[in-house]
Image 1 (cartoon, rainbow, N blue to C red):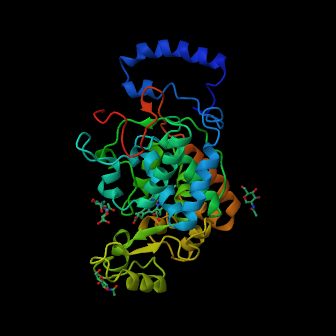
Image 2: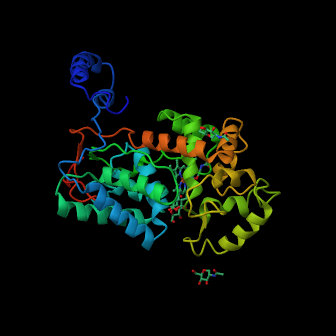
Image 3: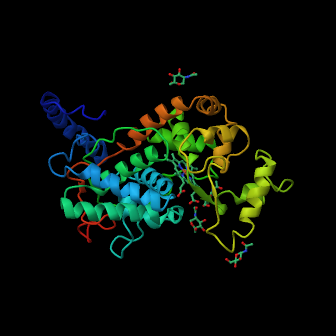
Length: 349
Ligand code: HEM
Ligand SMILES: *[C@@H]1O[C@H](CO)[C@@H](O)[C@H](O)[C@H]1NC(C)=O
Ligand SMILES: *[C@@H]1O[C@H](CO)[C@@H](O)[C@H](O)[C@H]1NC(C)=O
Ligand SMILES: *[C@@H]1O[C@H](CO)[C@@H](O)[C@H](O)[C@H]1NC(C)=O
Ligand SMILES: CC(=O)N[C@H]1CO[C@H](CO)[C@@H](O)[C@@H]1O
């Protein structure tokens, strides 16, 4: 359902009528069908009256943090995407494990490498906003807005982020598995993962263009450079000079697992369409990156974005907006967290 489509009072009435009908259907369909039905109305100016300095405070802290630690942008974009793909954009990724909830999303193996800069940024903003307007702004809105601002700040497109998300009440490591793409998956598997969540192949290819910034740890691509197959240690799809450089960089990676390479070797800190151009020259870092230029379902889209940055920016902005609305929480199944790393009721779900 599009944002604001239940905004007019006329439509709200319609919703109520339909809701009665849904109660009957509920007997047959699982509860989630119903929960996802009355989505909250997100608006651009949600905090205009309750926290008028929301945008200003957020942007000041984001700008300072990015200047101080340039790895922040990629970290935040990745954390935001992961958060949205696991149980919706509800800041559940920010919740640390505790003995009531078991392992949280943030501590799932796949997430161990999620950088601390994103958590640090959100904490700083939340602290400032709790002083300015306590209990008003959700952590999920802070994360969505920060990600958008950082994309713009590093040279990418701007898009509106509608506000009014509630923070989730559930975060479990076990929910991460099966929700997120891994570099060793086939293109069919990845396409399916996005399709299940309502994203087209074109939207998927545009979103993965976020790999125009940030890092990947050597363990994520080491098989491509050290033990690709019995006969070929190096993936033949990889540019040989690039492979040599990565082998040097990662020579020690088992002893030092923090070793990492830029996702976009040509313009690592700039949000641009270089990622797609790289794929055409064998400069894709992850196996799944490189596979996008070989698979006939994704190749024409890679070619389009490599040739036309405007087309990439337009599609990326639209797809990110869609990500930012994915399975957002209503009043009842969410809250405004006091701290972004813990639920208000520690003994909750
Ligand atoms: C085919 C699907 C995808 C796969 C297999 C994938 C996999 C990965 C892996 C393995 C890393 C390196 C993590 C690390 O070593 O710390 C990474 C980094 C990253 N990913 Fe993805 N990803 C995918 C899609 C996306 C999407 C859709 C976005 C955002 C819209 C995204 C944003 C990022 C960013 C920004 C980084 C850099 C993080 C940093 O520098 O801290 N990825 N991705
Ligand atoms: C992919 O990698 C993950 C974690 O590194 C592993 O658990 C999984 O079995 C691998 N999957 C395939 C299909 O190789
Ligand atoms: C390899 O890692 C060890 C342990 O972290 C470190 O002491 C050593 O300097 C590293 N060597 C290289 C060549 O990076
Ligand atoms: C690039 O894409 C934009 C947006 O789709 C389009 O308006 C423009 O005509 C394209 N430019 C070229 C040179 O094809
Ligand atoms: C699935 C995955 O990427 N797991 C990694 C999580 O982080 C640790 C520590 O950096 C790695 O050793 C794992 O391979």
